[in-house]
Length: 294
Image (tube, rainbow, N blue to C red):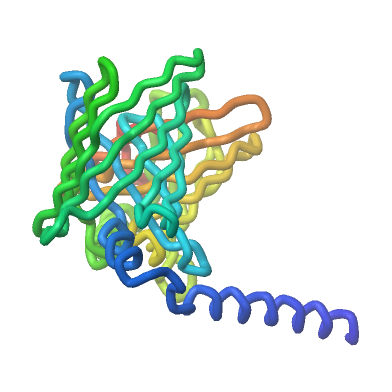
């Protein structure tokens, strides 16, 4: 009994410490806090890279001490991660990004009498090529536009904020449609059987995946830090993944994810379309679907 009690006290102590850190007031200068707070959240992305259309999701959230931002960008299934911090020596907001074949360092200043930013970006390719060029950010009502150019590379993105309330509504809409039987994809061998259920409290939706290409389990819940709907997935093979879910219309969920296994890393984009095709079997109704395995 004594050992169990000690473990409980340690766990409770760690949990309490984490919450106190997340509630800290940012020690940054007010200008830095104001600039960085403009980015916090989840944003649906549409734009062009070198004239070709791109779709994705951009996310920014505070680190526990509120001294910097954690950044993630999924552009058409290619994930880049970064950090954002304030450089006191130059009074600039700085982002450092790492992607599949490059690293990017960006420095911003706020324009005089404006919420918009201007700056310089430096792109370093893995082959040693270095490019530098201008970047800028313009903020609108629930949007921000990024544009940048370095060498032959040109990028334009319109980012639209996804409100926290939308993430909760997306979770509830998915539960309303998906719960009530099992979804079967007979095109896979063996057939995939997916069953959605609420966890106690109805804040977490669980997806039990049997058969098919990737049996396992997924937990779906609202992430309040990045203000989005997150899917956390573990396959029976040991693959672990996380996806951000957008809800562009009432019948569609878009998943932008990143998966890691012992031997592989995979970035992905999955579209789930709701369809009211039903077939009944005993003892529970089974819905047939042609959607991709998720």
